[in-house]
Image (cartoon, rainbow, N blue to C red; front, side, top):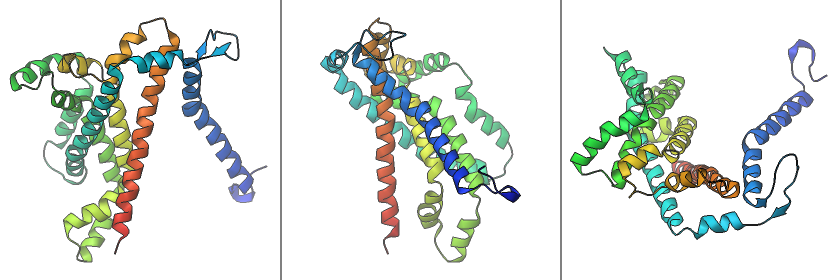
Length: 275
């Protein structure tokens, strides 16, 4: 039956749950992407037909024929990576302070950190636009990167704070007893143990930055061309194949970012293992 006396799950029961988990993950994450790809290379695929009438790459030709696509992809990747790095350098110290330090007004500061995601994005963009113009950052990539910190930094701090809460200080205290300096403890002990939280933070921040259209349009002024700036005009069209193709591009970028992040983590861990 899959369960032994005493409530122990048998090997067969564990395999069944693993299979169910894999099927659920496939239906939740992989199947929609495959469907959008088929939609992008099909013509006349309508309900209740279970397969498309014909296959062609017309939609992808339309997408890659746009000379602005490569520029938009490069700009999107540069902005996303820069936003992730800035979140790392800002959110890590903030999360450590909120997790391990007790001081007056801590609750108020935590509430202030979360305010940007509670205030409408349009209100933030319009207010920051005037400041960006005065500082000469409007219509510049650096201005777009900074404005993307508004919707991403609260999530980054929250995710990392939860990670530091779970980690505690026992491992770091043990390293201090062994005579290791605090700076080395952070890079060789704390950071490797925080990799699950850092991975979650990085992919979440990249996806949020990738999806920003209003903030990029207002602060970038149409001169900072990212993928959403190309995507949303097509989204209003009746060409479902082209829209599906852009959706696949949007889905592939976070996957590529995650693969690059994992490769960087592997290299980092290999460096730490060297004597």
